[in-house]
Length: 246
Image (cartoon, rainbow, N blue to C red; front, side, top):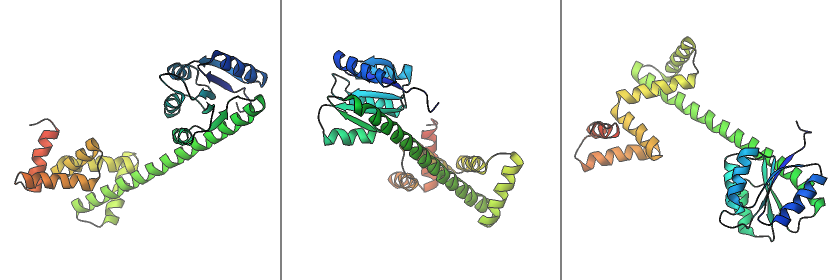
């Protein structure tokens, strides 16, 4: 597949510019899978064709090239996006880089610059995807480790044993049930939250409001103070509200 002809989508509101690019790409053995005259059509084209490369003009009416590029790259509708610009603009370059654009061509486009720009953009895009994947895997590993440690503490408190012994119990249980330690930890935490109104409300506030555990706990305490309630009483009342019981 590495030697397969690369597919390209051309996006420019000038028909002559699209025709010139199409001719240059065909001469260099690229396959033009479609053309679009604005950002809306560009996104639709990429959803249908999933090209390796999008050559995207920056300045287009209504839905410009940058907005279209952000959508295409965030939804992974193409291998890479190369912007076509008439001039160099630092703000455009910065925004495009944040979106994941990996190549730039300054108009007028010269045929000899097309292939090297496309190859470099594709290679850089692959590196970015690999980097994002590695970061996501690292974050997931940290998330699972935190879940296991939290479940370990809960089991230790419940069984009145050391955290080392709690970890052994969790491992044995995971093996018996043939599930991963992280998935078992999630179940332990979920059950503890149901049994403990403070924990339940804290988890719900963190999930719904996208806030830290400390911030969620502070909201419970503040609610209790405002209504002259203990932490547990405040949690019970908040739990009823969160679950539609009040």
